[in-house]
Image (cartoon, rainbow over all chains, first blue to last red; front, side):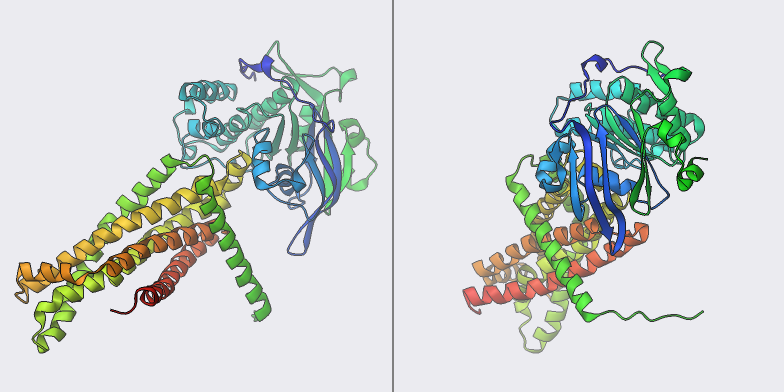
Length: 281
Length: 264
């Protein structure tokens, strides 16, 4: 399946942060009501890399994304996003940083009282852009996710997959340097999932956006590790056998509030850890 | 199946209450400070003013008329025994303008709008829309709470004036039609009874009540936990808390004004 292009794609380039990493977690812990959700989590997300986060339900994957966004504060440890330490920033400072980061929530989290174009153009409206400019960019990004026809509809009139794609459109409209996806393919049919995986892959390969991808679907992450987005044909293509795992894709597995694996697809496939082998089998 | 009775520590309850008061105070202070920060979201303020003010008009008109008429009816039955039925206007104007107008309007708007705010914001919390707004770089207190505070305080002020006026008209209807009080006499009594202090008392209260209704409604909405059941709980708590707080604040404001201006 092919995805349409964004006209401004050549203008989009990933920005290198002072620390050199898009996201860095340094010994981060958080607990809710004595229940430890994340315990001493450390990892780094390289610029332009997409890291897939795995773990059983309740293992703290969504919490980890919210920590990266500064929506939650850790009990201990440090988090750096685009070179800035989010753990010591005020909410007002975080609002500025969040303009450079996009997030797609698990249930889309579209504003149900606003129409699709208002949802997608929310950030641009807040920035005070002229109405014509907002409409142009909203149509452009909706075309990118193949949903221009939903421009004037309410989120309640869309299917789950369409809502997820509108949420992606809302997240990428300002061309963020980092994208956080929280189970973007969860509960969707294989065809829609594939469309969304292709969109994420396009963000990675064409726009070089760094991303954390929370998912339960191993096949999605492996598709991303074994395929790349071809600009010429405007669709994803399988990598030749010798070049497998050469795309900027890595995996991180959480278990019992700790990181038990952080590496690429090859390392994951050859891991001797019993739990990991069972998990990927 | 055996039910276990869970004992709640009084210290834990006290801590929870203290924490809630702290959170409410912080939210209110932050929302007020937002009036001095840009952007001001005047469009959202106007939209809320329409929802809260114009939307509450029918209920305020009805209650204002009814309360004024009932006040006159009850006052007349007592005054008749002393041959002072012509004093109905004095009782109705004083009762409506200083006390019942602001109080009844406040309670009506609390029932209608504190619940509305709590359920709307609560639904946004449980569906992660508030988190999404923060993630999109917008301060929810600025975008959602400050416009509601401004709109409620502003519109309650005018709704109270309307309720007062309709209460006086309701009182006039009863006094004139049932007890034969002369029109000119009624309205002269109404006008001459009121002094600056009464009008000041009657107009300062709705501003305070508006602040209470909106901040309590928004606080319970923003602190919603536990899905749709949580939204229902927040809605009920918002109405109960704002109504009780209105009654308590009403007492202390009246007392304070008596202390400042002296008794009549």
